[in-house]
Length: 334
Image (cartoon, rainbow, N blue to C red; front, side, top):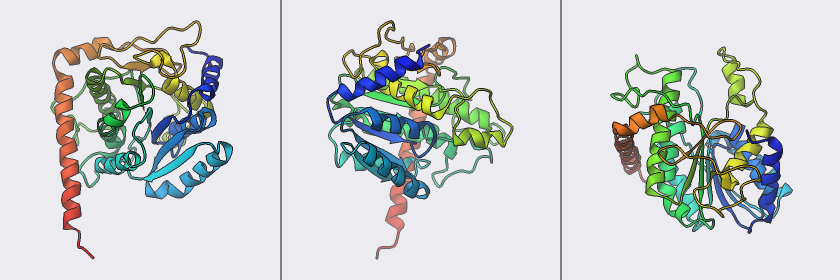
């Protein structure tokens, strides 16, 4: 395990790095993402931060950003209004960043929820719990690749917070779980996790400079966990949001999780660069150690399931974008 003291010492060294790291947070209006955002704003020197909030949370999130402006006035804090349960809304996010930036150093994604009330599809025809945890995240990475490729660090970083390392079998004939008999809270979570790892691995192979971390943080004392308790889910000893945010920043900025050295903060003494999965990404447990799920993932790759997942995902992206464009064209003009 990586001790919390090591994590904190590494994070403190961010202040000595060159100014102007650019980071985008998707899912930082509460929970793990919010804590990660706060830790990044606390330690980075003159950071340029972009954060996404759906309309219902804009006021509260703007209040948080105002507090960060006061605590670190050297930073730039930009709020983007978008609902990432809709894949097409990611285009708003990308456009907002691209209008102001030529590079992106860190992409941190933690949006998501468990659909305890059952599946209620969005206007794009997708399960929103899967959209936030899989489709929108992968569409964001795909669309942001040009900015990530221009990163000022040697190895730009993508962190996806879900369940890296505990992937499970897929329903390969129904990847979106449209059959009501196949959909469940657990199955949607497994699909989002496993498809996420396979798709992120594919992007890593195509973009060898890109460092991708798929993190399983374990139980964390977030509002989401409090809601889960109402449905009988009360895991023991959840990690505090404060510690989880610190560990999240460590994953996003320490070279232990970089494919090329010299990216951000050097690897702490006594630790080595983490090992990657067979597909080329870092699958990390709650305390910062790599996990090994090759018995499952190697079989999926060998059978071409990763390519099937990616082809299916591209069709979903195309359908969502076309649906949104057609909807805009049908709107009456003033």
